[in-house]
Image (cartoon, rainbow, N blue to C red; front, top):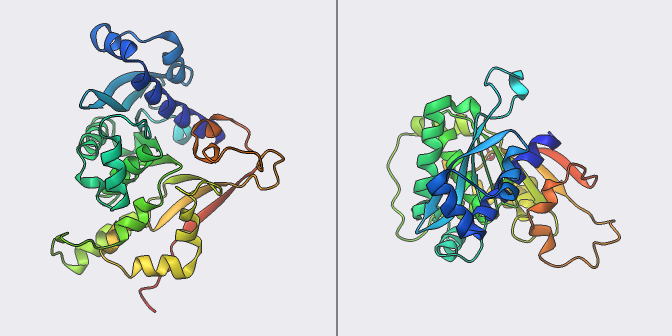
Length: 289
């Protein structure tokens, strides 16, 4: 599992690099060439860059194709297609997306539409069992929503989400003024919920990161999670997840650590992280109380 985590984190890092260097981005678009240093972020793990996802000439995501044969490696084989999303870089559209995250309306942003379409194309091509979604920060929020949308259709994609904003979950629990809800039967809602309960995205959380750390409360504090579950619509919750919680409380460098360090992506690119604990989290069932 550490190797899979490192690989997915590096594929997200590559999206940052593609957006940082417009020259390399333009050259790839025209000649299918990318700077070797940039390409190393995916070639090292046996992937090639399939497509860049752009919004107003800004790269916010990428699709990578594995060079490993689909039947080689069994269940532990790498995903055939990985759809990856970067976090905030203060580019055009980044602030808009972050504002919508705060209000639980990220699904209204153009980037989510582009992302979901890319995920659906990948699933249609190779099957949901061979597709993975991954992202960091804002990108993790996009990947989480796209993965959840597919899960409600019975397509349980592998997902690796680094420092996802906890508002992605909390905001989606709250009914906002002006949001019209589609009338559906209880059977339809329960069917989607039954699929969601089987989906277990991997959430990588740092306890000192205020942006994502409240996912721990979301799953582990009964009063907090219960209040979310009693809000509507229920099928917008995340019933289950596998949490990888980094808590370097006893680290000698933790006291001098920069406030932004816990939110950085590169920490998850290291194979050995001795201060990480794993929790198979599941929301308590409050429907009977």
